Length: 262
Image 1 (cartoon, rainbow, N blue to C red):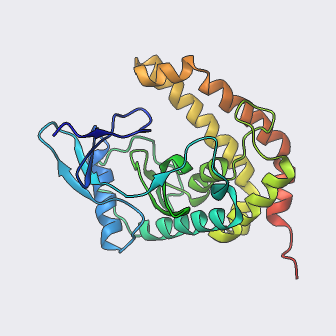
Image 2: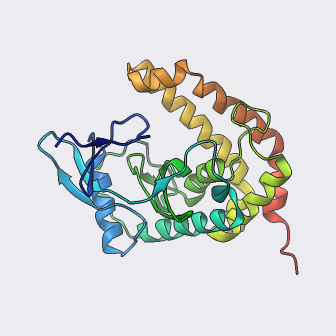
Image 3: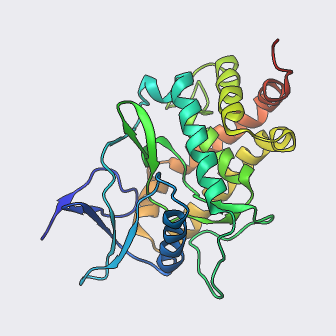
């Protein structure tokens, strides 16, 4: 029953046993399991079901067959069809969380944000997206779920899926014009509101700033995984992207708000 250790997992060790995945639990896990139960009740197919805990105290979740996308991103992730399908999967997820009642005293890993329009996944990215035949079908790793605005979750998804990283940075990316075009495809497929389009670039910057602060805080508290990330320079990479996105925000926003072509 040792299971098969799965690649990825971020700061957690993830083990597959048969048709299930075992992951370390935390104070936030009951709230996440309640959310997954709500999604199951809504018939949303793009999330694992939770099955309690095993004898070692690990949470038990469905194993979602398919492949997750790691860096460098495969072409199908950033192609228009891939971006469109991912954005629609995100929209369906957000819509399915509406009406979810947070239990009194519920604990989330990340702090809730106002307005709490939906339950944000908190880490929408290709490495948490399951692809089957190059098509996104599900999201995994809901540890960072928390109540918040749609645009807050969408902003991080845009950063990861488009992606909006600095073309001159260590990870590279498409040039700004192509990023802006892809971002418009992503926003249109989601059905992002005009108001959210106006603030999206700023939301991406703010989301990355909170992530850097979170990483540094956890590292300072003695979390070895996050300390390793800081040592590897992940925070500096995000700070570079923050500067880049702030500089090109007018280009991104103009593309988001441009009239539809006849």
